[in-house]
Length: 312
Ligand SMILES: C[S@@+](CC[C@H](N)C(=O)[O-])C[C@H]1O[C@@H](n2cnc3c(N)ncnc32)[C@H](O)[C@@H]1O
Image (cartoon, rainbow, N blue to C red):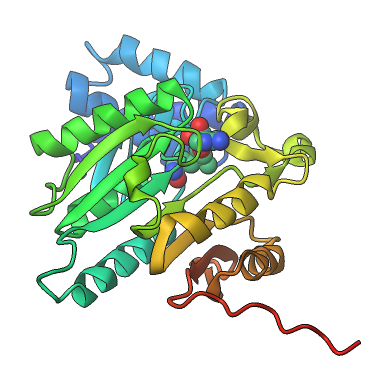
């Protein structure tokens, strides 16, 4: 429940809002409220014993550190997740991507009716960052064996800490029955057990997908605080998306689903890459702003027939 504000708190929120606004912080008043609420929660009073804490947090936000890193947490679907400097802050639009993966995992589970078949659903999240997508699946879908990987050691440490909070029951939602998660250091799928190759029900990722040339357009919160490796997919931007679509063709089980967040400007490129890789049923899903946000595709159930030789 949001803390109640008395007149003193309201005055502090106004003062903080003025400081943030003067520093060019977008949504200064909303951020001021978050910062004061955070201090009330952890120190009890933003004027007395919490004043020094509040001052330090406001100074960080004035330097355009993302709000979520300043208060050390964010909310993603059902979960409250820890955030930390050096790790990409989960974005609201990625909740849609997690939702698509959850739907695909539930669908796979519903189809896994025959007792002789492998009991659990196998899901891999590449490029996990805080673990937001993987942990959302873990609390929303039963009977999943889940591996979440990231190339970055700081991200792996944070995702592991967030996993521990879910297991301890202090992250807002509990692990679904029969579901297990492991967090691994992994360049794309290199850290996943090779015996899972060809057996994944779902492969999901929000990979780096921006072109290097975009850097000049980023707000300071992104340019100075999100790690470059989390954002830039390569000179063209699409390199990691292309690589994951290729990996999907060998790591997914026949009929398995790949879901990747994409650059809203690259929907046609993502569809072209999925089709060229031999995936089937490719479609683009939009986010709540109407922007192209994810590609969803499947590994074909039957092997593709060899191409017919042409007559001339
Ligand atoms: C856009 S962030 C997404 C983080 C998280 N999944 C989310 O949606 O909030 C991309 C993540 O991919 C990781 N990454 C970048 N290149 C990678 C690679 N080749 N293999 C594995 N992880 C990679 C980065 O360290 C970063 O954590």
